[in-house]
Length: 315
Picture (cartoon, rainbow, N blue to C red):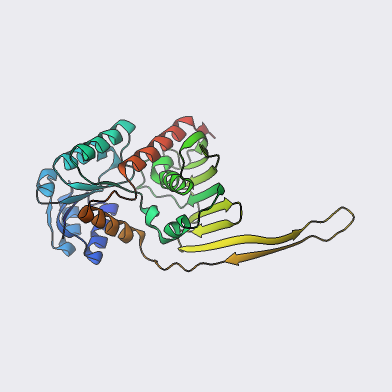
């Protein structure tokens, strides 16, 4: 069983610790955080050591989860990979494209697994949706929720990056043109953003991200030539809508009729996306497989979000 170190004992580090304990795919050997009390609190239920020294944490590990602040990902991630550990790095992969490139280079040079924690890719609704894609025309993604003062990054790197990554995976093409508008509402960074992405294969993606909403919504609608698929990521629920027949009215009073069909497929793989993600990482470590969300995927999502932020029309 691979030995795992968790670097960063904040909210995400604690979540990873909880999940690692429940799935038992790893032996957690240490938890590292500058705040020793916080590291100890995460380590205790795992029976793991705790430390504030990164070198000490990775010395007895085969794999590492890096859940430190994003601006530290480049430096710490490179150190971890060069020390021979496989790495699951929380999103965003880094805060600059150059740092992301260095992480990819370090993983390749040291023959290590580099996986990026875009956890929504492991949402059962998303994995099922991916099997149903056939000639998509457009995608609309909404990710909104209430404000939290703990979110320090702008909404592009905090929330929208999830959906840029999902859109790339669904569409299977790269971004060609972008448009974006954003607004600062409650913090010093963008709290609300809308983006329109045109992909090289002609598919359009309309993405809305907000952390100043009064309710929580995570929804994907994929319009295809023969149907429309609506995925609710919170409920892990999918509906497939089809128009069976239509009869249009004329001005002289011919009646309009439309009949449709709604299918609700059964999702066999319900469960916490973070647990699915960690199991996948364990499989990649043990079988030396390329992860579902690679370093390159993380870098391209980052690159697109940085371009959207830079191109934003401020409203």
